[in-house]
Amino acid sequence: MAAKICSLILLALVLGSLSPPSAADNVLYTGGSLLDGQSLTQVFYTLIMQSDCNLVLYYGSRPVWASQTYGWGRGCRATMQGDGNFVVYTAFGRPVWASHTQATVGNYVLVLLPYGDVVIYGGSVWATGTHGGGGAAPPPVEAQPPSNATASAPAPTPHC
Image (cartoon, rainbow, N blue to C red):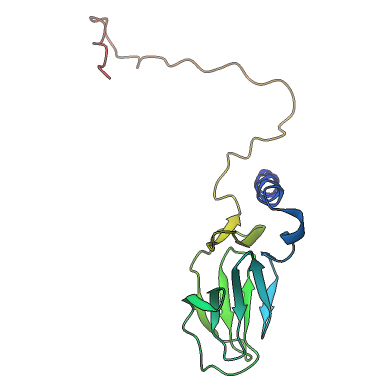
């Protein structure tokens, strides 16, 4: 539960920093796909799933990055998966490129930023799981010396 809350807060912060007219055009949510010919846009940048199965980021009409997956046929899709991995699949479901960002199952969002970077946000990797435990917080635990410790001179102060 804590992981979902953290993911939603992060998502809200990311989306809150985007200008309202472009919020829907530059974001791909968990489970979302760019199908043949579909794209994300942000200012001068476009991330498009081309009909030749190549996922390409353009600055205007100039390609600046590509998945190098051209030639796999029509009907490919680029999917933002629930494990945080962004994957290009052929029409037959064969993965031909991946971001290799898989982590825990959660809510992820792929964002095309105004300066042309494509970033995946979301998903907590680890948490204590103590959120919402109820009741008052327990008293702090003070460090105790081991039972076999003997009295000695104070430890020297570290120099920073």
